[in-house]
Image 1 (cartoon, protein in one colour):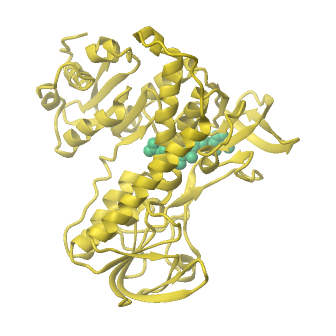
Image 2 (image 1 turned 180 degrees about the vertical axis):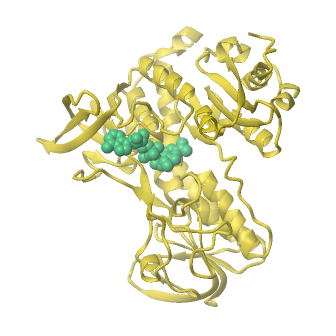
Image 3 (image 1 turned 180 degrees about the horizontal axis):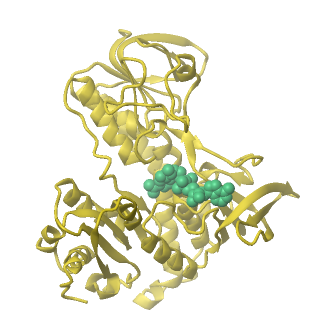
Length: 468
Ligand code: NAI
């Protein structure tokens, strides 16, 4: 193999593999280095995809137990086969990671197996599993090494009793008592999985609300729904220690206001207090500039402080740590390297929590707009008044459209609904095209669909809904 490339991408997560494919499509000779045996990074192997598989299966299990009978579907005794559920998850991961291998071949991306390191601005070394090191020359390097879970001081993740999301996606037995530290994305998705499968789940969150950064309206409604589902919350509490005694975890926490101390004993503890940039040693050795959160600092062209070395995805100081944000950056950086005008609109990055119901949002929240002193109007439409949601027994939640008070331009949309994850795309497109609430309100939406609630919420901005 010729060891000279135009672009070498380090990391094959959603940022890296997409970047490699786009680079190759643009005629650049491209390689992608990956340490794992399979492509796809955290998202495909131990993140978004396995969690969605378990969320999907556990939702069916829970529905079979509690809803099928009401729909006239009589079953025998429902029994959980956790190892089969896990095998199904593994098979889905395998299919998708093989899919990227296929896409690499189709797009002529060279796959390099091993740990990639930047030796100089034009050299990447790859050390494979047997310790063999090969160096490659390249005109451009894209660092897409992602992120890793963080923990709390004094709490060591052993992936057996005290686990990160990785461990919590592979429990061999349903834990009787599960404590989740952190009421963010990972904490709430995995709480949902294990609650549905039979665990007693307690979420301990430092703030006085769940999902920081989310519209307060949505956060409050979401919390009420999760309360009803039986998840226990200890908000405004700080975990001070986790100790393992006789194969059980003992979690101590203190209320931030009352200072009341509490202790719970449990079988497993999931630490979900955020992730940190996975900045490898080579970045430090080359003195590539980091920001104060220890993420790689890049400019609007994704250039690091060293020319021809770029960085994208969770490892950089731009945008949220989300797979689809990384994908957009992967495409943009490839286009910029090829001399085109790659660009990411950070104002329109949707976010979805794949619980039941799902929660999705794009654009600004009311709290952000107040801070920025922007005057706005709000339209809210409940799923209780949406016919499709009603026939499906999915009436929880609402759509909230926020529009500029003067221009009517849509500034933000939040949705709690069984179908929120798919519905938010409509709001994203509207915002990308600079639509007004009136534009959405005057667009014909198919009946009967959950999406009609988006139209009605947009009509509500002008106080003229039909079905409420
Ligand atoms: P997160 O940032 O979403 O939530 C962490 C939570 O932990 C916060 O609510 C925070 O207040 C709380 N916390 C921090 N210190 C604490 C302490 N000492 N005691 C109690 N609570 C404490 O982080 P998470 O859930 O770990 O997710 C990591 C990243 O992965 C996020 O950036 C998220 O965007 C991404 N992700 C996205 C998903 C999606 O798109 N559906 C799913 C899973 C992860």
